[in-house]
Length: 272
Image 1 (tube, rainbow, N blue to C red):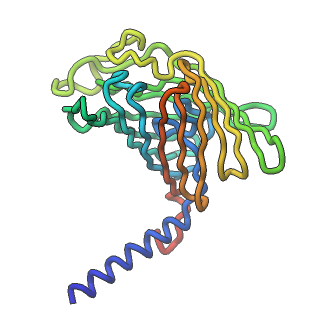
Image 2: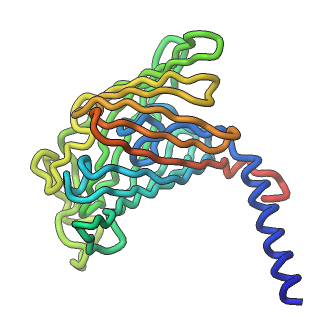
Image 3: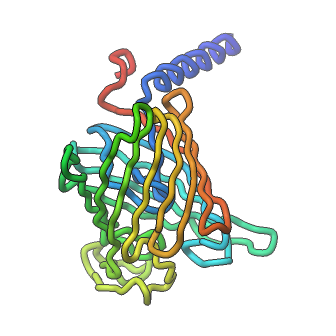
């Protein structure tokens, strides 16, 4: 009897998973923190209202955001478009143990970002978006404070070119203190220069830009300048549902990642 119930339970989960998978929209490549973009750089491409995405990225040891040449990192991310132009994203950055360097830390570096599309892309002008890490962060290595523009061009019948350019602020606001300090989350705000921040990784600090050449929205090649290095990469979308990508950072080391997405407002009625 218990075995039959267990089999019915597994069958239900399998069918539910298949339905959700079937109704996933086409996913696109995302940057290191899970935002629409290339490898490190974001773009102004916005997702539909209700779109929810989760994923994983691997950042190699020589380009660690919490310390170069110390430990590789994994980034877990999730984001949702809660209004037609407003997207909220959360990230969890964790250092990975190596044979020569064990990591002793808590859950990891948690962050939250807001992305707002100031201008929608038209035939004559690019789309424009502002991305900002919320100022409640106490200790963050993946801080994003940028303005970015993106324009699409049809090169041929099956080929499209996406071009993005932006600028990352050299300053940011955060809460000065410790996670163990008991004070209001609306206090202790400090104006901080990135170049003197404890991590000094210069992530998205200054001008950046990139382009993506895609074939039928199924696969594509990427190239970017992330304000520090030149990176190239490629991505592919399988079954119109699941995207995997990889990048070669500064001609030196590889990063890779994957993401899934679903529109919470367009699920089948039976699932709702």
